[in-house]
Length: 599
Image (cartoon, rainbow, N blue to C red):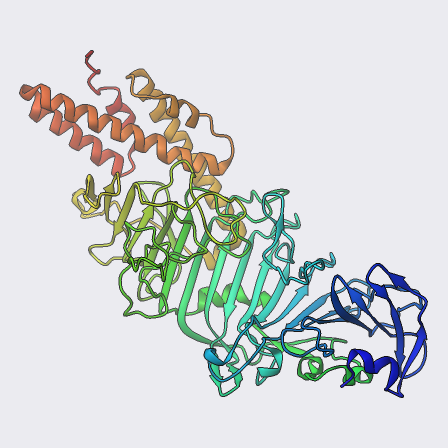
């Protein structure tokens, strides 16, 4: 093993070719191994000993840094003269097709200690490989000033610096590469991003994870995946300063999918043997292939797999901008254990909170603390299909037994770790909407509203009460197979539904206007422009008018007992029309709502 001092003085197969280069950090050492021109640079850089190994043959005698196309950077983080020992960082770039653009970047970060249990491990090991399919040269991110592996950093609003945009993959394991029984198989295996519009941003992402099986000081990772996420930017609004804008995510888990046959070559990645003496840990440098879910088969695999559990989440307040997904809400406090305690839908507590409170649905510290809606298919019966609720014109998960929405109407809160909007964490829950499938047919049929988070039901409606004379239940509507729709079909479906809901809402608004039922908030909501604004505002215009009418009718019943029967019948008619989606009738009924009385 060649340590920093030995390269210059004690190693006969290493040759010093230049000593004249200097920087503010001190002398720059140009060396060669195996003859020829310089192929190693050693120097101090930003307070650390670093070494560049040139595997592309591009190094010049007066270069001050190595190559970002076919090169390796080694950082001696603890100053012990060893470049891939405890806590050290090694980074390799590789141009696999010879076009001069790096296609692959590997990060190898060692722990301070590694042992058979977590008690024997300290530090934050990483084995991660970025794979660029877009040929735009963007890969992982390292803060060179601090040598901080910060693949969660961003600029501006949410321009994530690493390669989370466009058509790209990465694989990753939180273990040192030398501890893996087979470093060609990883835990996140892979994380794939898809640019469906050719805009350079990701409209869809899929994350596959393989089970890790620790054995002694090594880690075995099975060549299978046992859960996957698929996430969508359904309104297609990603762009500059809004590069990550995912709106909904599905999680499938509990079933293993064999990927052992999905072998992906890593052309020209294996390290040049002449540099072997620079490494204690050469395992990762021997790789010439990776085993991971094929990005071109991932989408159909997700929807063709019979998952045991399927979860769904929708970013109803539109403020999630994380790079990977809308963070999943959990029906239990431990989503990996079907016997976990039920989450408290009236809590904003995170998992493992200091107060020992039962966590809420958004217990994951990365999730929005308020504003997302989750639904849970606890036996995978719905296959990840969606339908549009007749009562709210929202997407719902077919097969979900129940769900809940912790409302953040004005997008005031977030507080999730790594969320670029920097909005505060909600301290308490306000409005909660709970959904239930009480007859087990796969459709939500009962909706409960808790307007102020006090755990008391303020309004409840059951669609089973409105079946027609032929026995048809209004909750039963067509389902949509996302596996067949793909991103484009889902995008078009969302736009069509949002526009239809919006036109309904404007009819409701205009009718309510004539009956003096609007407010300044309504007036602003009636001026929505983007499809997502129309989707959000159409719900709230209709819902707030519904609540205002119900309140007016109940007040009039209290003051005009002689009209009780007539007003109760009118209200029941209005509720039926509203929750069965007959908005032409809703508008007609609004026109007959009794006028408010002067006070």
